[in-house]
Length: 425
Image (cartoon, rainbow, N blue to C red; front, side, top):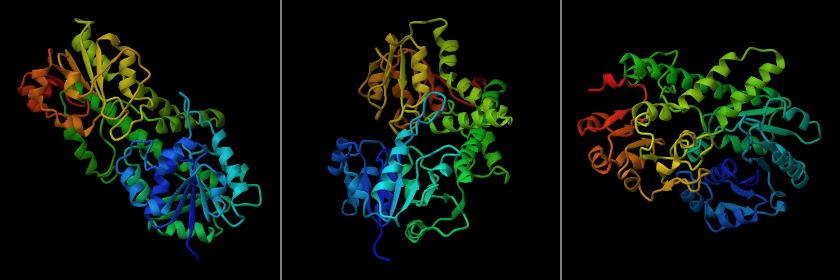
């Protein structure tokens, strides 16, 4: 077989990380996007998304990467991935029109033996009607994680591939591409593959919800969740990699989308998805933790207190604020008394907040400091320096970024997730 050429259509988060990983694995790779400005930036080596290691990997593989805004660029590709990120609304409904358009474009522009693979996440029932033509279409479940997208694209745990006929062999070019990554491959019918990603996310949501609920009980009974979680991970039925870290609800868009999809499917088919509704409700409840805590500890007595919010992204190592707890908090606060700082996130849709240029500038003279994103930069913040800079004493640190014993030792009123304040020492 001659050297394969791999194409990616759509150069948003999913497509760009996947294309760069393809090049790193030795394939000549073409990235197409109709956005001329985006393509121009990529040709100049400028990355439009925040993802650790992506810029460096793009620069390393310049000789194997071609970016184009002309759809003719994919004509010679042996495998073409439709890899556009799918936008969702507040109830997790996906707008798939752009994906539809790219599939039609891929069918029209590629040669008849090229494998066309939909990498964009689509709901159950999407692929089967689109596979009725002469060309075989495949669906590959994407498993990227914001903040770890390069790692996940380079070293996937497994490939999940949906096909019209899972017993038929994959096209040789597609098989050779998958083989290069050296991970297990699961070939299944379209509908199973479409539901697989949702199933993974439901199990993750169950773990998150359980950890959040139990951590909140810890706060009430004097227990410490960080002492309990290791015991659970030693149980073989749960496992050492179980996601048991309490947080501020589900955010980012992808998990929320899948929970809403399952709930709508259950309503349509008469299934019981009450547990999913509980997960959604638990997420909304936990997202209010910071505001409830500020209110009970400070705002009830001082509604005009000055608040410093450190972190706007929904998690570290990304600039995404989709359903971010920090934005939910800002929406509840009197913003004229709020200063915010995030090392990556730019403009936000919250008017009138004061944007600080550093974390120390943000916390200066604050009555309370709330750490809403566990950025590594915030781990360098010494409790003694924080105490010296603040006017008040209250620190909300849900992710335990600071050393809590050190914070208490310098007189800070330290509050975190999963630990009773009366249990601190």
